Every structure is written in structure tokens, then in C-alpha cells.
Image (cartoon, rainbow, N blue to C red; front, side, top):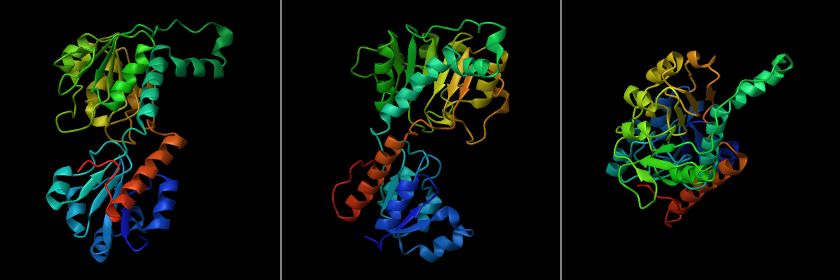
Length: 312
């Protein structure tokens, strides 16, 4: 397979890059100073694209590659891939579900604890020497809090199962009611009104963009906490910042942002906000498992075998 051209659109994982280089004819798109000219020159040789949550395959890229057969994503989210154009062109699409579920769900619980118990502020308090001057202020209990989850897919369900261990009542909103004992709400506003902590765990689509807006934030209220381990554009970030600064929202734990890696500086001084650099699946073990799925899907496709995790 070393003659098959694979376009890696951005740097994402050293192990994946090395293995692609061993097994295929790898093109590193981000190293090309004149990308349009590069695509024109290599259009007949590139048969696969590897993308991630940052960059994938939009309509322009797909149209520029007439020999493209498959887009294999190093992520579970597919918002950077034009799925409609892929279907039109007969291009297969795969992602990396399941292998990252545990890490993302673990991190969601970690963010809840970090925000309510002010773990990051406590750490800073000790390091700065402030503890010698007096005890840290009291924080908020996590166990028993009402957890509302937007999107009860693999990750949302894993978060719910973990939260149950803390005696947290679970409710959710999704496109359809699930076969579960958790309480279902038909709108996000209603869910937020009945939650102490609102967790975003749904896929990013045009319908879920800014699914958390001012109305939802106000329904969550000044004691409520928002956790986002989905995608930045799920939240109207300007409204979120305003609510946190004005005290209309109790806190937030954010792993994703609207315009990564840009983060609103107004959040930096708020101790009721925990900020992470989109590391939901960022463990050595999971990233290797994700890379192996990308590689396995490519090898299956070019060996005319069933794809491991087909989406299109």
C-alpha cells in the first residue's frame, strides 16, 4: 500500500504520522506553502484524507481530489467533514468512536469536581503561600447534584453512569427519547431549569450550534454550572462570558471554545471557571487506540474489506 497517496491535513499525533508514513505515500498538507498548487499537482495520486477535530475535508478539498475514496477522521466528531459532499461523490467516511468515550466522560466528571470544589483555585492558594494566612473559603458539594445532559449518546451515557456513582439524579435532552430510566426533557431550556449542572455531550450540527444560548444560561441560573466537552460552537460564547462576569451563571468547566485556540481573556481571572485546551481524549492510551482505528479503516478500505467504523 506504500504507493497509495494519503493526505494528512494537519499535525495531530506522532505515532499516527509515523505509521502512515510507513504504510502509505504520506503527504503533509500543512507543510505546503502553496496548497492550491500542491493539490493540483497531486490530485491524481491522493486517494485518502486523514483529518481531526481541527481540520477535515470540506467541499473544496473534496472537489479538488477526483481520486479521493475515503476520509478517515482522527476524532469522533465529524463537523469538519462535508458529509453531504462525501455522499454525493461516493467517498467513504470513518471516525474513532468508543475508544475515547471513557477519557472524555472521565474529564467531564473531573471538570464538575474542579469547578464546584474550586480545585484549581485551591492549588493556586497553596502554591502562593496564602494558606499560611488562613483557610480557603468553603466550596460546593458535588454528590447529589442534578445533572442534565444534552445528548445521550456514547459519551453522554458514560457521563451519566459515572455521575450516578455520586448519587446524582440524571436527566437529558436529545433528538428522541431513549430507552432509559433517566428523566427526559423536550427542550434544552426545560432541562437547564431542572439541573444544577448542564453538560454538553452532543454532536455539532447546524441544529446544535449555539444550542446553549442566553435563554438556556439564564434557565441554569446563578448557582448553575455549565460543562462543555462537546464543541465550542455549541455555546454562544459571548453570552456565556457575559453571564459569568455578571454573576448570572455560577460557574463553567470548558474543554472547548468557539475559535480555538483563542479563549476569551475575560475568563482568565474567574476562579469559578476551569479552562482546558481541548484535551478530552488526550491520553497516551486513547490517542494510540484512535490512531490504530484510523490506520485500520484505511487498510480495510484499500484491501476491499469492511470498514471498522463506517459513517458514510
